[in-house]
Length: 257
Figure 1 (tube, one colour):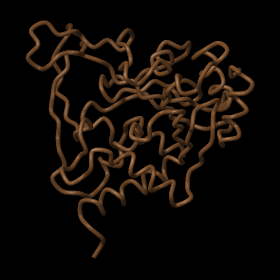
Figure 2 (spheres, one colour):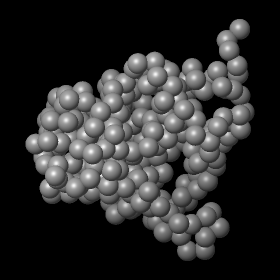
Figure 3 (cartoon, one colour):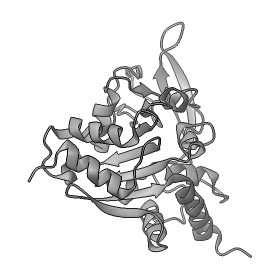
């Protein structure tokens, strides 16, 4: 039987989502099974669950399809740049949803809808865009939650903030450039991030985000349940980041002395 707006909303509330919350969502719509109204119904149910005083946030990134030496690169235009396709249809649909606001960072960019959307997306730093003053830090400031709606646990983007904050040596750094719009026309902008394509330190396993999430859930924290047909998880963002920082530091530095 296909899920409906009513049954999706009921499942989200049962999982622990309530009005006024800042909710960062990752989703595999396919994992939800058949839905009356498709992805639009999913988004409507999420927005109803957080209510008019809440905010829905999603990581969008984008697909530049070029390296630094590309002779004719595209200019990043956040108004039209599609969300990275491997994030799924929900993220791209949110990008074009009425009232959606997108942050200016091409790669660490998020889209937000709701009461805190403008504040969350404003002034996204181009340098270390997953760290302090970023939308990810602001999700923590608002005691936000992370919803994995049928999405794999290794795709929790907020854990890049834990990588940024963890006190571990020799973090991998990625420096690159993007052609960005400017007052005098397109111009190259240099970016620097702790590497998000691979674990931030060579000692970490490739699936460290999944291991962090599973270890966190094993402590009895977080909530899990079915939303339609999708196994789903709800995390307190601040608590997950606290746990993730400690996990990363232990994995690289060993136990505290």
